[in-house]
Image 1 (tube, rainbow, N blue to C red):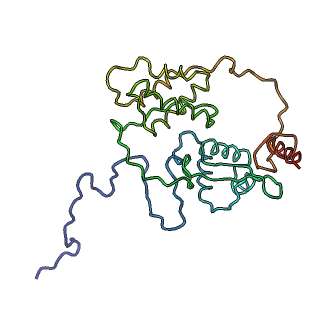
Image 2 (cartoon, rainbow, N blue to C red):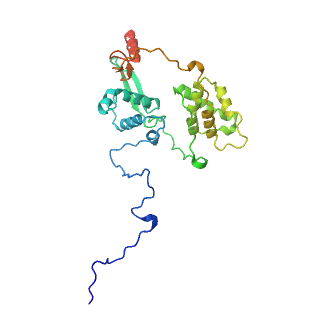
Length: 288
């Protein structure tokens, strides 16, 4: 009887063809995700924060940390500086960024014993509030032709709510100038900072309407919001001459201090209270 060769495999291996080779990757470079589903101790963060086009990386990371904390946690500047290596100056700047973009609200309140304290509220979706009247789930938006996002628009240097409301009112009224300029709520919110940037540069509402509605193409407007975004950016006027910054005289530059009342950073020769807290304390003393 012949002896079987032990070095020959009992079954022939099928050759893996082409792109299915286990050692061959479809892309030579680029991000891949190795995600595992969380079942405990996790925080839901929106991409509007994680991919925010204007916030600094420090502000984004600080907001993620704050949103992950339980209610009642201390998030004053000194406590955060003790937790992270960035220091009070950078942390104070990041908190101001979050406050400017609506991810943080800081309000001062007078408590029964007469002291003024600062209450801080973290907002995981600026513009929405858990105390709002419940609303029906929004309908899925129809994709724009080609699926392209709207072009970016300018932003005002000081996005105060009153200025943005004037810009929103102007945009919602454009349909009276041309019925094709009927904008959705989402498109109006995207364009409002651009209009606010024009109003901030002392352009009258009539001037903004004229720039946005004059010489429109005669054919139907498939993406009116994209056209308005382009005009707001391409035709943005320069700042008024009297607002051109002039080199100021070299003032005495005091070191940064942290306010004992509201934890805001301010410049002064020594520790104490910021100007707002000093004014509040003066009003309190006069009232008593």
